View 1 (cartoon, rainbow, N blue to C red):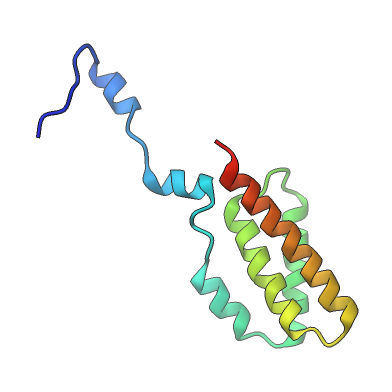
View 2 (view 1 turned 90 degrees about the vertical axis):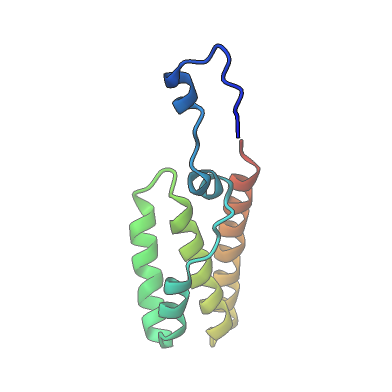
Length: 111
């Protein structure tokens, strides 16, 4: 197979190579973390609350958290939402999950 490379140097050609995984991550197409999902589904309610505290602590120092952090938060807060024993905790978890979904969707739309 012949590629059109007229007038392009090797350096220009190599600068045009992109990683599909990087592009997918930037676009938010890799929106699942199966190992974290499995970890979360095995936790009891107390462990989920501890994980929520750890999540907030780890995210608090980040100005622009990586997509992986947002995805893990969405997984965590969905689990909290489903297992909440009080309406207040369910509403809180739902609110955080929707906020994270919004951030993930914003990243999908970004160039």
